[in-house]
Amino acid sequence: MLKIAIPNKGSLSEDALALIKEAGYKARRENRELSVIDSLNEVEFLFLRPRDIAVYVGGGIVDLGITGRDLLLDSCATASELMPLGFGASKFCYAVPAESTLLPANFNHLRIATSYPNIVLADMKKRGFDVEIVKLDGAVEISIQLGVADVIADVVDSGATLKQAGLKIVGEPLMKSEAVVIASTPDSAQKPAVHTFLRRLEGIIVARSYVVVEYDIKEELLAKACTITPGIEAPTVSPLNKKGWFAVKSMVKRAELNQIIDRLEDTGANGIIVTDIRTCRI
Image (cartoon, rainbow, N blue to C red; front, side, top):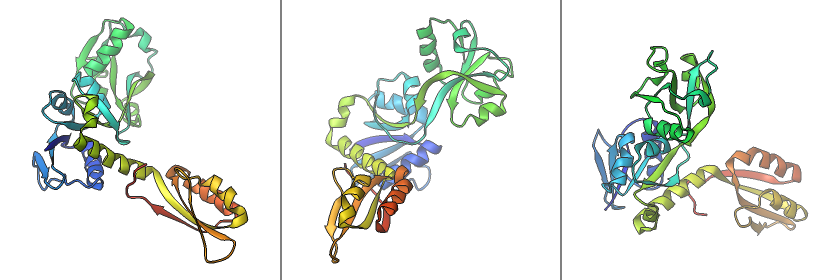
């Protein structure tokens, strides 16, 4: 039976559970169970702390895990990223007081507070700097105000929390993070059960990025309309029971949908309909 670790709480947990459910797996806990068995798909889902998941995966205790890329790298576990999942996006950045002129090039011999010491140490080692790491489990933003650090390094979403704490981001992000599927080795993706799990998730992720657009178009305008909606391989084109008219169906990117509809209407398309996609394989 395939064992998959997923976060036991927080936004990563909620989004991971929603994705897994859409992919056809049963992983919803009734109470606070540590594991749920999906007997139909022969998968056991284990609910673990997001920070610990990479350690369990790297140690071969579980086959797969869903966690943040930042947590994977900071764990230093022997686990590999198999697939990004498109949610939980964030940046890992340095921050200093808003009035400070400090830049990362001046961090040598300073105190850096963070919940991700290994990511920071790796960056400082690349720069040839010797710094003091102040490891904190949370509320990193207040550490400078309390006098225990000169700089912080933390995960940043909108940056609003830093601004409220009187801080500003300096330098380029150390990394960009998001939720990822991890395994002990990249070769794990070749195992049939793992491959099926990844393909199901991929189908949902791709489906969220596309919609199906359908419309009717005159024959003389068909070629131009198809350049607007080329589809994955090609659009589906069928003759209507009205001479000189055709029905077209095609997948288009959701982010471009409104512009595409505008162009189709300007071209002469009628009866434009848009349908969501639950899952797909391309």
